[in-house]
Every structure is written in C-alpha cells, then in structure tokens.
Length: 383
Image (tube, rainbow, N blue to C red; front, side, top):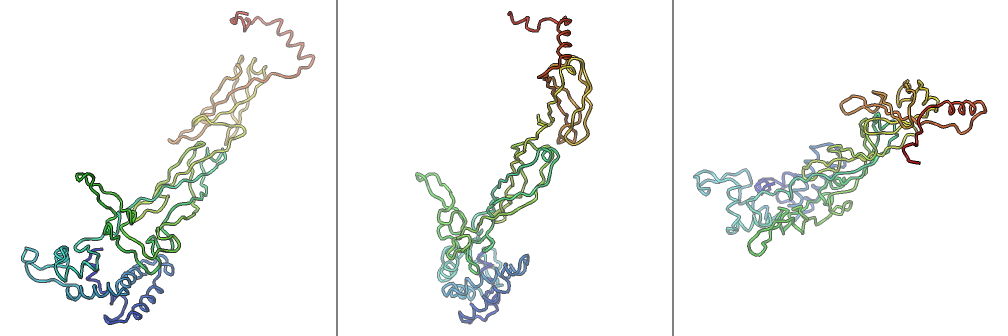
C-alpha cells in the first residue's frame, strides 16, 4: 500500500468514531468490529475479512498516540484527503497529487517531511511492497503401498501428508489477532539489504533482521510464534495411474504446501511401494510368470493353460523338445501402457524332474535310454 493510500484513508470513519474520540472509545469501537468480522467467525466471507483488515489497520494508527498525532497532522496538511493542490510544483503547470507532494517530502523538507517521514518511518514517496514478492510453496512428499493388482490397474487412494501452510490463527501474518506487523526498519520493508564488497561490488541479500519478509512482528501469534507458517496434516484422495512400478515417484502439481504472498502452491510427490504378487512379476510393462511343465510335456510337446492377472486363462502350445527356461509370449495380456495399448505376458517354463518313479515308469525310462540315439550332451566338455 502506498503512503498516499494511508493518508487519504479516513481511519476515524472506518472505526465509526469522531476525530476527537478518546482512546477507550477507539478501543471499544475496534473490538466491536473485530468481534463481528473476525475471519474465524466468518469463514469464506470476503467482505467480513476486508472489514476486519481495514479496522485492524485503522486501530494500529489511532491507538498509538504518536502515530495518531502524525496522521492527524498529515491529513490537516493535505486537507483531509481527496485533494489536488494547484500550481507548478510538478514542473507541468498542472495540479499536484498526493504522490507528487510525497515525492517532494522524501528529502525531508521542513515540518511536512517530519510529519510524513515519521508516520511512515522515512519511506515517503515510495510504495510498500509488503516485504518480499510471491514465494512458491514447499514441495511435499507422501508414500503409499499398493497391492500388485491395484498397481497394474490403477487406483484412487487416500494419502496423509504433512505440509507447511499459512497459520490458521493469524492467517499467515505472523501477528497476534487484532494487531498488524510493522515495516522492518533495517530494510525499510524491501526484504533486502545491500552491502559493498571492497568498495566496488554491491551485493544484495535477504535482510537478516526480518529474514527477507520486509516486516517485523512485535506481538507474535502464539500459535506459530510469529512465523506465519504452521505444520498441518491433511488427507487427500490421489489417483495412482495404471501401470505404476515399485519405487516410482509421481508428481501432482499444486497439491503441496501453500505459497506465500500470492505465490503458487508447491507440488505433491507420491512415492509408490508395490507388494509382490505370489505368482506374477513385472518386466517393464510386461507381466511375467513361471509355469512348471513335466519332462514328458517338454519332450513330447503339449497344450497347457496359463493364468492371467485379470482375466481368463490362455492356452499355450509347448513344442516338442522345449528346453527348461524357454520363454513364450502371450500377446496383449500385460500392463496397459501410457498410450492405452496392452503389453504382453511373458511365460517362462520350468521343467520339473520327477523325484520318485514307479517300477513301470522306471522300466520305460530305461528302455528309452537304451533306444535313444541322441548325441552325448557333454561331448564338448572334453571329458
């Protein structure tokens, strides 16, 4: 808010008291307005919030005898606000506005400079930025654990997260309810200080006294201790997309901590953990499964049934002479890709050797061994 705005505002009218009101009358009027319009009593009521802020601003000036005198003197000098002074002070031969006169007062010309400079801590003719500019909210991380099937199909899950948001008691101002922060005297509200290194280079850095806020808190909020920020825990529903993998980090824009001074909210990052499945695995977007077959099925060939994750079993042809560990592909039975097309199911066969044989089975195998004309599989080993 510019100094012009401060001088042209009729704080007596804001509080509904006469210009000669006693301090107790000012206090009584402010308390009445604050009680009726406090944000805690009027949630989501923009008009009440505006009225509360205007009353708090008026009270901060009129309840301080020194500031009230300076304010009264300045308004008398300006004619009570809404004024235009005649005559060539601006060099254009036209009328002078409050901003013109405030710029001239920056040099501290006589009583006028003393009045305005005292009221605004010497910041005449400037526009207060209210401290630093917009600051983006912090990013927040949350974790969720899904079953294997839910990770493949996608699911909406509740996630509890802790973030740093505007304090609910002071609404981010850092000051006790009913009071206002004051401009930092070190940086004069800019939030930055400049120092010269070796008399050559000017270095700007955040003001250490106000930590870059441009404001100092004399009566801090008891909830956040003047920081304007407080830890909050909230639960939100988050949609986990289909096909997410174990350890994947998902970004949800704008769902992190609240920004400051009109800054954008931070982002929420969700780290996904996936419980292993007793049968299926993952290889990229493909599902994997290991299926046991008998050594006769491997030797003679067979048609076998293979389960799928979310549908009926598929029939798979095992060619005669299939070795242990061979992988077959069931197309379209895997994870749905980002482009909407399904990946595949990779089926690896594991030949199971019988642990015990009947007399007939043993005789049949011995007859097979005698009749077999296959080359020695270890011939290449040189033994």
